[in-house]
Amino acid sequence: MSSLKRAGDVTITIEGTNRSATLPLLAGTLGPPAVDIRKLYQELGVFTFDPGYGETASCESKITYIDGDAGVLLYRGYPIEQLAEKSDFVEVCYLLMYGELPTAEQLAHFRRGVTYHTMVHEQLRRFFDGFRRDAHPMAVMCGVVGALAAFYHDNLDINDPRQREIAAYRLIAKVPTIAAWAYKYSLGQPFIYPRNDLSYAANFLHMLNAVPAEEYKVSPTLEKAMDLILILHADHEQNASTSTVRLAGSTGANPFACIAAGIAALWGPAHGGANEAVLKMLSDIGHPKNIPAFINEVKDKNSHTKLMGFGHRVYKNFDPRAKIMKESCHAVLKELGVTHEPLLELAMELERIALTDEYFISRKLYPNVDFYSGIILKAMGIPTSMFTVIFAVARTIGWISQWKELIEDPSQRIGRPRQVYTGPPRRDYVPIEARG
Ligand code: SDX
Image (tube, rainbow, N blue to C red):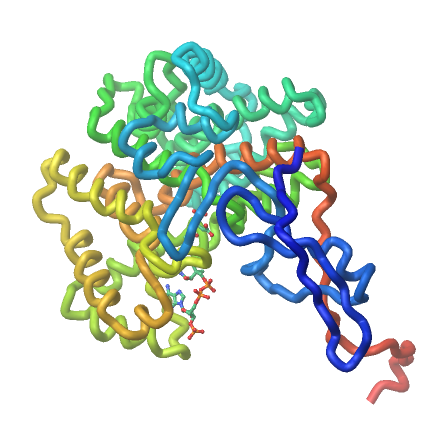
């Protein structure tokens, strides 16, 4: 049921004509109101133009709120800072999916439900063999997560709430198993099965790092750091990959195929692939003495060089997740006994210089979630190629919560943006012998 409230009207007039349209202004709980343009073409015969949808609300949602100017991020109204400090990832999954913090009984039931869906169909193992060992793990994730549709497509009625819930449990629980197996496959090591006696984060680390030859004890420090990284990456409003999931979901596609589409979109270096790109950028810079030359290269538009991990379509202030990640960096490195991490020192010096430089200040470019996450993941022994995979593991709950909200929205229709056509006007076919 829509919770949008009428907050007045907006009148659009085409100058030099007597044509105008009065459209409703719709307000939510927080954030700017939106002009309801659903009748704009019918009343005025015009479209709106917003490449990249930077100023367009694609949906009504109750899940995540971002105030980019103030650097605020709320999951179902709860500040990310409080959830990072007081909650854990599985509780955050429940909150994002059901909208409220669970009681102890609800959480225990949910945690058990996720735990008992972590195994995958044994035949799914065969999909891995089709990849080269040196395939990027995100390529494997796109393929194998999409292949879940081959196992569950036929017995899934997305209009049945219980079946939507089971699909959600399956994805939350099985994506870490597939992610860990993608890593093991790249190493040529045996797959490690999930363990029901471990927490979500510990189980994921165990599947990533254990080998059959000996017992692997998960470090509580790494378990806590992984859980925090998963919480910080869980959802983020209508970002590119979530919008991809929603667009695919609006056609009635299988949720497993929709999440695979989200994984593909997340892979891009402008989006989830940035954490991997930050580490490469820091390695290429190599030493603080090279920072000024790099900053000059970034300012040179012809270089097409970006300061990876900086800037954001919505945040024009510090990304609150970057602040939490930066603090956690120091704590994790200290607890791991890493007293000297050149990459962290380089990142902090790069941040310090960038934040005093007019180019970045004038464009309101600040560190985003990806600037520090890679440094923690590297300190945890995670290879760079797995950084975006970890982002995908975390974001699966956000994608599936947004997908459920879309399917359960009675007003939702198939997504179908329009365009402004600037190609050639109608013309007749020219036989090849008559072409110049
Ligand atoms: C994520 O949307 C989400 O919520 C995404 C995410 C999530 O949780 O789902 O937060 C995760 O994707 C974080 C972003 C990770 N990407 C990077 O760190 C890549 C580096 N950042 C840039 O590619 C860029 O900042 C984007 C893609 C993130 C945002 O692109 P925009 O919205 O087009 O950037 P903008 O309009 O704010 O840019 C304004 C100006 C432009 O220069 P001018 O044309 O005005 O001269 O700033 C420049 C841009 O060229 N600019 C940068 C820059 N980011 C923007 N210049 C150098 N380095 C950068 N990083």
